[in-house]
Length: 392
Image 1 (cartoon, rainbow, N blue to C red):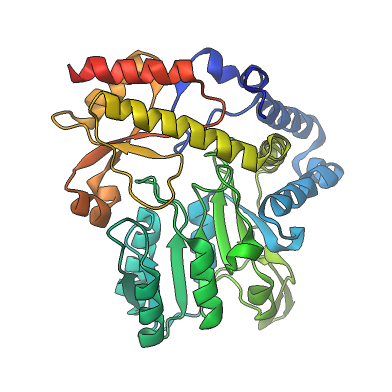
Image 2 (image 1 turned 90 degrees about the horizontal axis):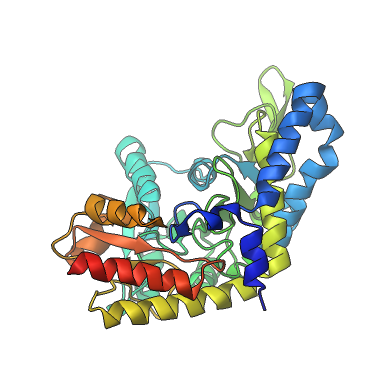
C-alpha cells in the first residue's frame, strides 16, 4: 500500500496545485529538487570536472537504478536529454538504406512519426504502418503479415501513445520481432514510471524514456536502453563522439563496449543526480503499487466523466493513466485556462499531434487528464465539478 499522505508531504507542489498533467510533466519530490540543488552548489565551489570525478559513485548510481527499473544491467543504459533524443540517437544507429522498410503503428508518437517521415524523404526508406484493431491497438496479425512481406530493418512501436489511453501489446510485438529477426525500437516515454516495464520480457533492442513524466524527475533528462544484441553487432550512433568511442588512429575509431557509446561527452550531471533520486523514489514506492493506484484513480475518473455525460476517447484492451476527453463546442485554450484558474492542471492534445488516431475518432482536439498515484479522490471531485460547471 502507498502512504498517500506521506507521498504528498514529499511533494511540495501538492500544496499549490491539483496536478492532472503527469503525462506532460509530473510534480517532482523534494528529494529530486534537493539532490540537484546540492550537486549544483557542490559543483560551484569544486569545479565542474572535479565535482563529476569526486561524485562518480553517485553518478554511476543513476545507471544502476535505471537498470533495476527496467530489469537489465547498468552497461545497457545511456543517459540522454529526452526520450526523443534517445529515440533519434538509437534510430541513427540502424543502417537504413534506400528502399529499406520500417514498420510502425498508427498510434505512434508524433516526433517518432516525423523522424521517420524525414528519413523517408531524405534517404528514401519506406515507412509502413500496421493496421489497428477496431477495439484499439496494433493488429498483431497485420504486423506479422507486413514483416513477412517487407522484411523490414526495424519495427518501432510506442508503448503508451501520448494522445490516448491505449497500452500496446509490446511483449507480443517483441516475440514477432525475435521470431523474424527484426530490430525492435520501443518508445516507453509514457510508460516508464507508470506501469511495470521489463525489457527482458519485452525483448526490445532499444527503449527510449524520459524523466519528467511519470518518473517525476527533472526536465531535460531521459535515458536509452540498448540491448546486448545491439552492442554485440557493434551498432553505433551516426554521430558518435569522444565519450562513445576511442579515436585509435587517424582514420578509424573503436566504440565503447557498453551503452555509453550512445551518450555525449557533455552531460548535465545535476540532472543525472536528480534522475537517480527520482528513480530510487519510484522503486521505493514500487512500480506495481503505482500502477495499481493509477488504475483505481483512472477507473474513478472515467466513471465520473461518464456521469456528467463527457465522452472519453480511449480504446484498447488495457488502458493507461492517460484519459482523453471530447469537449464538443469548446476550444482547448478555453478549457485548459478555465481549469488552471481553479488551480487544476490538465493539457490538450490536438489533431496535428495524432493525425491518424484523431481523424478516425473525428475530433480536432481532446482534453488530456493524466492522474498519478499522489492524486486523491477529493482532487478528482474538484476536477469533475470544474468540468461540469464549464459544460453548463
